[in-house]
Length: 175
Image (cartoon, rainbow, N blue to C red; front, side):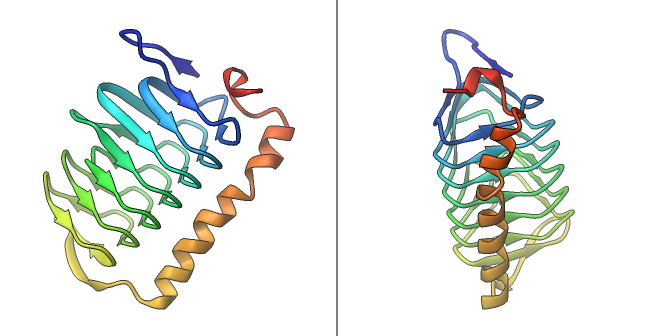
């Protein structure tokens, strides 16, 4: 469901997929070939939330921030993620049920392990491998991580047409 707030409405690229049971409100922008899955809430009532191309936000995740927030290209946001980040860099993966508190910055091609909790305003460089509560860098992602992150993002891009053809997208996003 796409909802306007204070004169600002979500803008969704026609090649993106928005589940009929997702809820996007306010100043949200969704890029080409991105996908928003069932139960996701993206609430842009305090700033713009911009989602790049080829990014997938999986079931029951929540994106909200008290500032503008930017999510790059080809990101995977796993199931049940709570994200108040300022930015998440291109090619990154946020594991299932992790929490990124207000103002977190994640560099490009970084991986946040499932169940991790990242404290407010922490900054992680490109290629960071982050795990724990509070989340700490454990080193850099390896080639096997990069391949996993790339495959995960691509697998969701490849699902878009199938779900759109089945009519499982939000009617407001159909061209």
